Image (tube, rainbow, N blue to C red):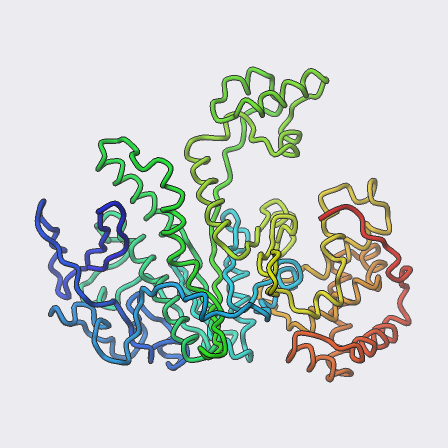
Amino acid sequence: GVFLWERSSLYYVYLLSPTDKSPVILPSNGENAYLMDKKLSFTPSMSAANRSESFSLIDMFGIPINSPTPQQKSSGDEDTISSINKDDASWPIFNETPKQSDLQTIRRSLVTGMTAVDALSPMGMGQNMIVLGNEKVGKSSLAVNTAIAQRNTGVKVIYACLTGQDEQVHDILRAQGALEYTTIVVPKDSMDQVRGETTENFGMEGEIAARQIVAASTAVSMGEHIRQKGGDALVILDDLRGHQDMWRFICESLLDASGGVNVFQGADDSAMRQYYSGLFQRVGKFNNAKGAGSLSMMMILETVPPPEPSKQTFVLEDFEREDMINEQTKARIRVLMERGVTITREVLQKLDIPPPGTRTVETLAQIQDIDALISLSDGHITIDEKAFKNGRKPAIDPSNSLTRVGIGSGPVQGQAFAPVILKVAPRMRLDMAQMVQDKDEVLGEELSNRIAAWEGVLSQPVGEVRSLAEIATTLYAVAKGKLDHRAKEEGVQGVRKCTSEFWNYIEKSKPEIVKEIQETQDIGQDNLDMLSKAMNDFFSNEKVEKEDSLEPLGVV
């Protein structure tokens, strides 16, 4: 079996099937179990840094699935899992988090190829990032685009397909030529085909969750090995629900063991943080003495929207009988009603108060779980379902997305933003913060047009990956007001068409600008002046609004 976790003298183990077709033998009550003095490991030659495209699919133990002759597993103690061995070429799957003394401050952005991400909530090379959103709002598309964007960057990608979409992801990445530097890890065992097993007949409770946990750790371990050799790796975990299910099972088993009494009250939060930290905190960039390699991680966390309330408007009694609404919130509702305010769903949404009947023990537990995961992460990107349904892609909510790298008061600050982004579009977040307001009536036509131009340049079709140079130059044109009239007259499509033409012009006529941005993620004053002149030349025949006359409004 594979040891997964221990808490309060309870050990959680994923029991493995024998290599033949016999069933898993469950231990009898009171029977002794032994923890072997060995670490589950894989062979690094099968990782993204060393294998051919034919080995692009790897099982949860690091063994190729689509190789011409699948590796066979023996049933002896020494090779119950073929990748458990004493060979120097093996690499542990479950590793400890790196020492802080071995890490350096994050200084370089990991470009995702998505303008909305790289300009508003970027990933630093060596950080983790959670992508939040409800079902089918484009989370996986963002992850796939990020993998494709690593072409020609030297970054190796390990994509853990934990949701069963490995064939679809494999086909997309192969069509884009991304399998040259990408390994796909799936929560399968290469011996399943020998035993005749499929995911439909996993009989043991929690087996799918256990397999997802092992596969995720294998993916991270592959990234760690690349970092150890001085390379840069990006690990993508497309689902964290297996880890969440495992944690819930741990909590439920502790309650069962204590007769239904939570004797660990008060320790649950710290224990949960320790549980997830074993995954989250394996990222980081090594210092020069350790080879300067980096491991970054993007994780997808699916959220479940609360149930829709059955009523459009509410009376005080609806809140008084709601146990999940605290007394302070009820007092706010009373004051509003005394002032004659009609309490509708829209009013409650603005006040960030859940409508009566939508907050249950289960939804509250999920919110607390998600909040804990966010607090552990180095940043998060929130995908807005309403914006997605309205056609914005990617539907990133800038007001609820951020990177924590570079935030703080320490003497040495990290940097997730590419410096060129801060130079060409310093006011972007200030403008975008106004999107939640009524642009036409409250902000005026000029700022309304500018925000529409920002929305246009952030719009990006699924599968389209942009270089940092393209992102920076097109943002610069919007920041200088060159697209305001296009936004007003032609909308998002007009802005996209014009920025595409402008980028083609810069790419062909100013290769020195492109080269500097791509190599340094920055732009010097000489090239910035050259870009400004080229931009003015390109838009000289355009009807341009008054250049950059807007003053920042509001507070981010």
